[in-house]
Length: 488
Ligand code: CA
Image 1 (cartoon, rainbow, N blue to C red):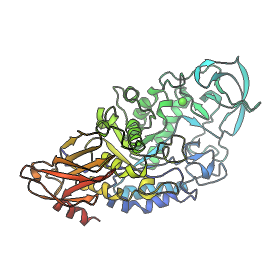
Image 2: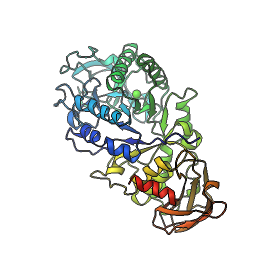
Image 3: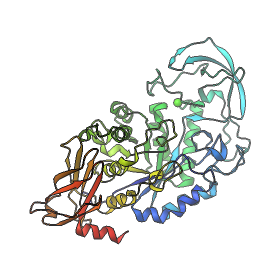
């Protein structure tokens, strides 16, 4: 147990990066630094052309085959750079032993090249199963011919038959949600709004055989070209559940290697996440409920019960398939899903996911480096390094108070001087009596995050660990702190 190096994923972008076409180079330049810090994998943003061209964060997908190579949507490069720079970035990360996860957005398309006349019915926004108009012929932006790419890599033309519907009739400006004739929303999606298959743009009919086959062809092309180690799958709660079970299987079989996948299922109910994972467990999911709980603590003035912080979370129910995170590009200030964990609680929130034995933690680029609307978390680099070097061995939790909780890792032989003690407060200062395990008896332990005096463990490994009000303390053994210093 515990001899493998701890894995830490970095979300390698935030929403408000400058649209300078230089991000692939920026990430590539940081490869060495990330590896030294203890990061083991990087999730890169969508690499293909979006409807907003060089301004598109990547989720308004226009052309999956245009990785910044063709003059489309007003630009050759994407927001992040050219195809050449993208492939170089992946290569550079790989050269530094970092795994690469690429962002895959297959639910919707935007920025069609041509309009089509399509028979459709309008449905109610709040109940997509309720038809509210007779059949009418709408003018839909639903034909994608990619004239700038002119058939390179794929000559597949998307027309309205490839989609379930749109939310705009160009003939009269009606922005109802329209379901195309002969189509139905996929059944195995989240039941918000009756059926939340439709999210935005042209909603892709994933199971329409020509579309399915094209998406598998693209997946194989993309995986082989980039040599990526896996995928981050966008908006899976709006996509027929059976799709990714088949797609991941077909793409992996064709490329002959395993591809790790983590899906974004943006819902906090554990039942929904577990229902989506099902018995097949073909992917992991982000632990959205844990994110909301961390956010709630940060805005509750100490009134949340910290001892229940992991109750009902995916990481508690299914630690092997949970990717834990504090914030991401959607939750940061200014975004639609805004639920940003307040600054004072950020270091503690990160300690709770990074130093924990359960879950695969994902660090947000904005928290690590800061962006124009997000401050960097000063303790973060050190916490990642503690995870890499010292957060090993059995974990014991002291979740016996609503305001001050703690846990210890007792260390393992394979990692020199490993073991740590963590105390978190969301109200007053406190002191926690905890045991750091039999390999750390009669030692001096140093507070490496939190600025408290050293403590002595007794003959059985017990000591009293201090934490400031609303603070975080991390203690490691004296020899553990020398191991840390070697890398800082
Ligand atoms: Ca959909």
